[in-house]
Length: 88
Image (cartoon, rainbow, N blue to C red; front, side, top):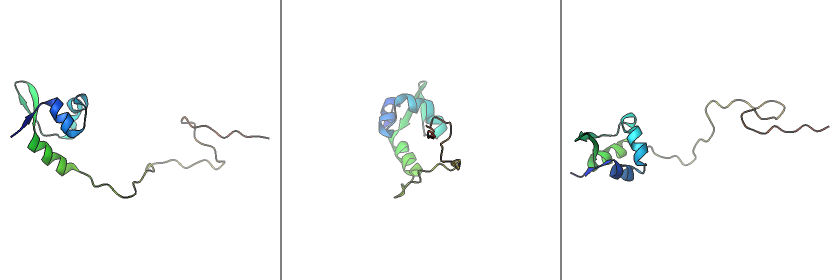
């Protein structure tokens, strides 16, 4: 059994230590405490990753689910987008 500290586990998972420290409970990462420190086992992390893997699709859906309809006049919304200038 290989026991990892937060830095080692973060590197194994491809996260920063701060991200893992802030998200391990919310994400359900298997852990335990030893002397008040958060510890992980490499075997448990491997199983957790395998269980939580999502298979990528060939063509990802890049459209947001609740995308608002574009205005009929062709202008974009005010959310940081540039409006088309009307010319006489």
